[in-house]
Image (tube, rainbow, N blue to C red):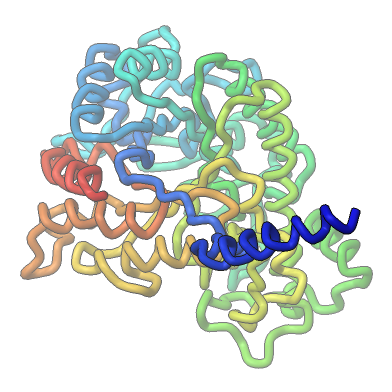
Length: 453
């Protein structure tokens, strides 16, 4: 044993000297590099509004194919097909609600009723033709609307079925609390608080999820109608149950009639902040429920939502689209400490951001710039969901473009501003690109973004 020990000593010294001469190993505590997603791999979404595009698509498969080819050649990868416009009627197969028979659209001769006489499945044609081109096809619904009224007439469940009159939201107006059916509002919203309303919408979503080849579902208007909504006796009872006490002065202890977003009273009414918390909880819980119902039918379908990018004032429609990790109350005085608990970003597969700023507000670090909206969305969602933002093409009409702005350049750079600040690009709406013949500008922007390394 002693001889072996003596012989081993030189070997030990050599090993130690050799080890000391080696380059130091990479410390185990170093963070792995963050995976970089190339712009070429990011989705490019194009919204297809039902009413605006109805003159072309209501009765023509050929027109659908034609415009999908143009969209594909312009660089878009995902088509979002509006199949439940604000009337609440539908453009897909379901026994839960009536099909769309006509929609109003702007034609050269004015606002015109466009009738649908075709009997083929509107959504299925988009799916089939889109897939032939290698496009993803998502279906979008106007979630909490049940009717619409215009100069052409009124349509939707809330106009057809008097037994559902209690489903209509009730508004806190300067002339008292009244049903939206008694106001001049065009889109007639449901009350999202009502259990029957949520069940009805979930049934519609289940029927959408039964389309086996549909790639995704998008909720639009998955919110309250506005700051004035909902002040029905039903919602009052639900709120009082939530806070565990009666509201003595309703609605003044919550929101005085006529209160405007961004012009809040000081001091805030007694129950104002809990009311905001209650509303975002309602929408959060609905989103969780709706996603569960959709995924139970089709676990592979993508489930997402469209929201406006102005998070700082989105409390007016009762939506917290941030991550529950984002502490809203540390940034905004109108939020309770528990407001953050009802952020729903972590329940989504994707989130579309309306980065709806003017044509001269493409770049920037704050809200009301396209880039700023997307940066803010990344900040508040905290990595819980991929976000894709982009412009409203309304801002690119000649009458809307500020002096000195080159509209083609604004459209092209909107891609750069939004796709690099987020996880994709989103354009609303196909009709604007068609009417203004602006496809080449968005194509140039997408091509340039895809070429970036």
